Length: 199
Image 1 (cartoon, rainbow, N blue to C red):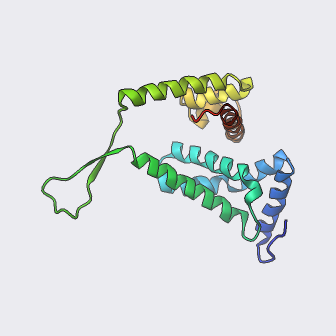
Image 2 (image 1 turned 120 degrees about the horizontal axis):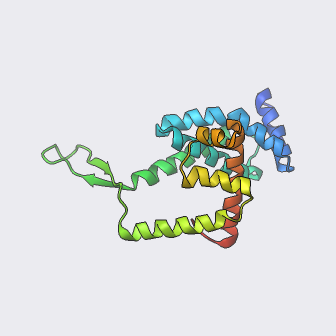
Image 3 (image 1 turned 180 degrees about the vertical axis):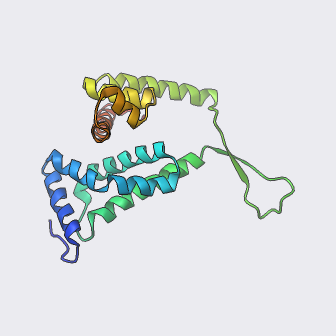
């Protein structure tokens, strides 16, 4: 990996960590995550104004970055590349969320005013059925995980516990919960890919 001479010392060390991670060193992944998790989280929190969404998007951002780590080139800082992935993923998330809105034109207002958007909280019967089928499929797939990962996924996504609640429930440090949930989601993603299920 040819590193750009103009990179800061911190950025050059990131390149070393990336190389070690690509060689399969788990600690290197954890260190990269620890170096940037808070910064990514606060950037995303500003974008979505929801701590739960920001936490999920942070884990997704690292998931995408680590999955495509071999595509990173050290012409620029790893942090730049990571922040780009996180912000693009967040923009997609916001677009999808906005797609689930009903537009209501404001009556007597001038025609150039923007329409009022109201979030549609209800699913039609077909969407409800699809959601239930996906949940059942996901539950079936979760049973294939190791018990500790299965428990984490169940608490986070089926019982909708916060990270803090999971940490208390399982008597684990918050950082461990986040790292293990990231791993559990990665394993789930791999199982889904193998089964060809687009959940």
